[in-house]
Image (tube, rainbow, N blue to C red; front, side, top):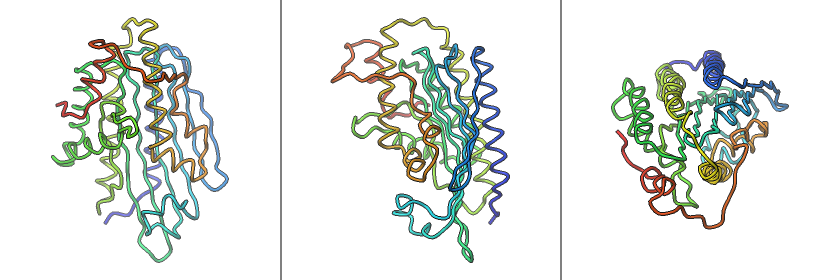
Length: 302
């Protein structure tokens, strides 16, 4: 078994944050990321970067966090009794991008590493992460491209990786109280801790680098499509689903808040503007209705 190299993982996450911010700034061409470094009283800290009021991106947050503690909250140990009484380190990069143009999809990505240690015992560690896409107006070629990149990066690690992690993504990013997917999926994995640390780390690096390869071409294709108030209002309505999922179901949000994480950084995933409408239903055969009928469904895209 390879010994986990936390410094190596941390350096990769920091460089990944730098690269993603650089590419998003370049594409937006108008606004820049503001950085706020913070320290956590219980241990650790991070650097939060947020781009606001851009030409393309209404808001984009790309956060690095490194959280440490002497013990985990009860919510984390309830189903993982082996973690009780262990100190822990949790680090990662998490990002959410909310474009201004309703024809450009929202996207989320995350790569993370967790290790819990106790003197005289073998460390418990794992990687997790993935990326997913949330369109407001669906384009089949965009979704096919998104999943093709996901499948291609998974292929060197085994034929079963993409279908397994695609299904995990479909199942995880499902809004149970609405009985609908949050978007068109992608990849999601957790508890990746095969005996070969290097292979797990290499896969996580592939996912981190793969995000830009998957997302930027979609933004380029859709960023100049004209839109009006109807599309904007539908975008704001659908953003409400994003908020509902993150506050009700997302494990990362709950862990961050329950472990005393920095609230502003945790909730940077929230869109800057959002609306709810009672008992809304799109007009039959409209582009808005097509999102529900043709895209917010679990299917094999490639």
